Image 1 (tube, rainbow, N blue to C red):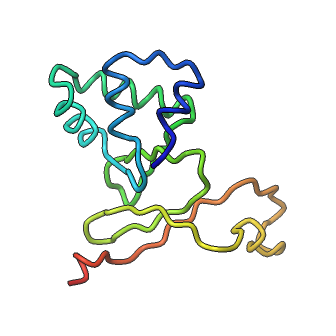
Image 2 (cartoon, helix red, strand yellow):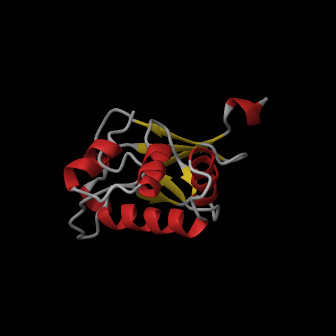
Image 3 (tube, rainbow, N blue to C red):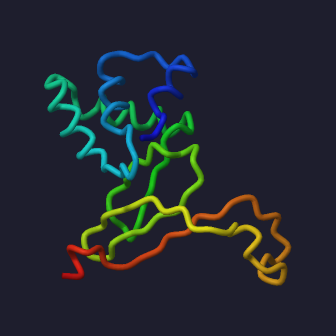
Length: 137
């Protein structure tokens, strides 16, 4: 489970019922929902929540650095609550399913000096692609 709700409490993020339900929907491992999926799940819990409120809450969470936007292959942006936990992504080329992965090794040290072109490298985003078991069947 991600620690999104606890991080937001520590930051003093004003937790209205609408914001709380958005955070609750996002909280968890391997959660990479689109804004529309967040809205649908939030509306199941709080029927009066508007799409605009969901988009505003997502924008605030991204601006705070508590949720990361993930874009793959021109598909809809997805929202990842594990912004504070180093990980990479495994993406299904068929259905777009995204899973968090934690391979061994350090991608920053794996980049040879000759391939840095003078950059002071501070981060790496690695996306592994393939077919999930359902799409491969």
